[in-house]
Length: 453
Image (cartoon, rainbow, N blue to C red; front, side):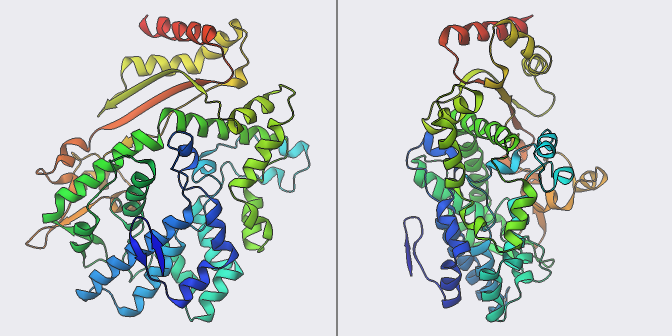
């Protein structure tokens, strides 16, 4: 039994306890769930370990509802719980941060340093889902426990990926146990009110469709709307907060520079560590990056890596030079378009003119925040014609009406999501490190002049 501040008592089976006690699972204790959010919200420093236990608990709640309705076999509940427990086992240090790094420019540096695989260096790190599948099926401390208990690791990996032919997908939906836990847990740990969704009512109104999809009774529509709106607010207030996002972009930039110096594992090395059961993978946690940042922060030689790593270690936030945000259903605004053009075509010349180091100035676009995965005004036939992939359509919250008809929430004209679903937030931000206020204000004026012309 584990006592959790969000869900209360969480019961564990013998096998679940044994998996939790493996070195590979214990690594999750050393991975922050919210990356650098604790730099803004001091209590938001909880880990993937506690989130995984929360998802296990909610999966058990959902499975019990399905069992009472004879929608899932008793033997499958055990597998659902294990999949929920292991769903985040492949995460990187500081959560999703490393997954979104573009490594296209790193290969030449690795070649010069005689890297083992210079010509085959991947352009991005493998997704945490891909690493998770490798861990569950290949890493001995996990896979052997499953096999010893007559459970096929490949079947657990398929459930995690939402690809099992018989067991419903409860981990990869707009409405799933993963989101239900992290929204409530993130709200609890940040102190924000946005994520306090009605978990009980949602779970008690879940059903399974004939094609094994998880659907929600239409009477619980308001609770589903609340969840989607809560997710939207949490993205704006926490995940894409200007300081949180600024630090994460700073770290991504720093990691690329460190890779050029041979200081950071390349993507294929991480896969090898997993498959070869290397103990190095157990140390591939937040402290792995922290130790490298500390090393360069302590050099005091005022080179680029020293400045960037010191900013991370001592919490010197990147200054937001300029930002444009659109809430739109169509084309970007003129201001957004002009700012984007300035960054692409004029930023380098402006930084040279002001004698600024271009390595200390960076810009990024947080990925668009949408109320739902697809535009509500597209019928399913139009979706099919436009060849949206099955995963995108499957992501949508689905309602089952009293007469048994299944519809996407985003297509329900009675739902506020029908009207909001077409909207998405587009944002573009320019940051600077180690810039004084006089230069910062001068740079801001330059932006405004260009955009206003």
